[in-house]
Image (tube, rainbow, N blue to C red; front, side, top):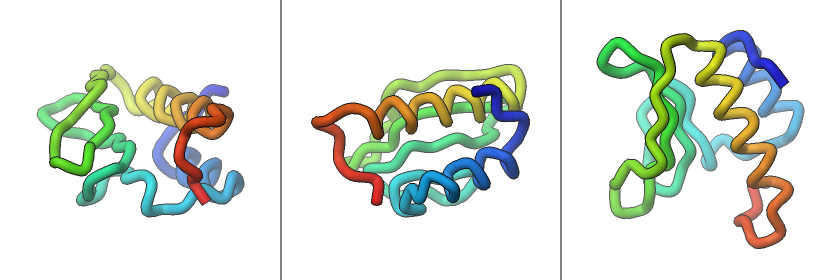
Length: 87
């Protein structure tokens, strides 16, 4: 699914009832969250682990690609039986 922007991403995650504690969208983030943010003049996706490390960093030229990747990652995690629950 192509997500156009942050506002659309937020709405999509709310419709899926994903707890806000499991992700961060352009905000301060805490450990054990998926993050999409704009840093250093580029859009970034990463997993911020409980020790404060950024893992699986992906960089994007535009907001739409970053949001779409973030959304697809969340959907994939929700379908994985061993993943932690998002709600």
